Image (cartoon, rainbow, N blue to C red; front, side, top):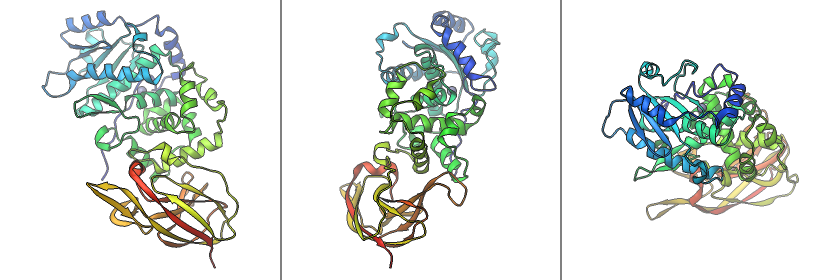
Length: 444
Ligand SMILES: [Zn+2]
């Protein structure tokens, strides 16, 4: 079943305008030329608009009051998000001083135009737009998606005016998506979920489904394409999803997270991508592989630490060798290289647990369990694969499963390492235990 599509389009300064120039201009005047929030709020009230206020936002809306629609909670959630954004950049909320934004939650654009709250220099937008510390978002029928849009535009206002952000569009949109992604806990509080654990947490966002679609149809971009994407590309959803994916990888993957965080706490100018790729230890080839592996396996709750891949090529497999495959990890390099076209035999044994249902441990052996399936194969089944740089179907590089289960014979499709893992959603690895013992040898 197809999920509802995200409709985040026409956001920010990213349509039809040379974004970088716009953002540079905006950033340089950002602090000096902030919108006077009390004055804007007073204007809104005079025009008969409702103004909901908190420490960090005054939100004007022409949306009629509807008990239980969550709109009155938005300023409180906005403030909580701002605290998270400060943490992200390693600054205190106190350092913001009186920093505040003016937001417009819009049903009828003409009412805001007539009130002078949507000046003619603001270009038409589909869902949202940000200019310095003020922003607009079109009202949405889905409360979760309304909150997401509010925080997406709010994150732009924050990064533009607090951090003087003028980065390339992948970073600019990636960080807004990343900082906006959240769920509400059982008490209705904001919880930042940069990698959402469940689709129900991010109703109508559809970003992970979008990336699945792009993968399935061979349209998923490479990392270099994402990093070089022009602003004009961001009038469509795939560009937002891909920008978020690149951003999430750099921010969460153990190989990049620390250096990226340090980099992001420095200047956020148009040379950001160049500074990122010049970070000591940054290898463009490996980052490209990491991104392809991430978008290949991406799912709710994706765990970068458990899914990080060792790309090193081990010695060629000549004599039978024993390999341990841990539950709770993504693709594991067997430390042995296969030769393209050669046949190999695998025999696996052992027992692992894949978490529990109630008090009962879910146990699996290399054949997997028919209790549940993931990506067309039994849960917990042992998978043997190789990384294929140029898949026959023309899609991006990815892992190709060549053998499954307790006993398998496979023909190597590339000169390169053998990878093994248990078949399981990447968000479910955290409660696994145990390992399989695998014997690998050249097939007779
Ligand atoms: Zn945006």
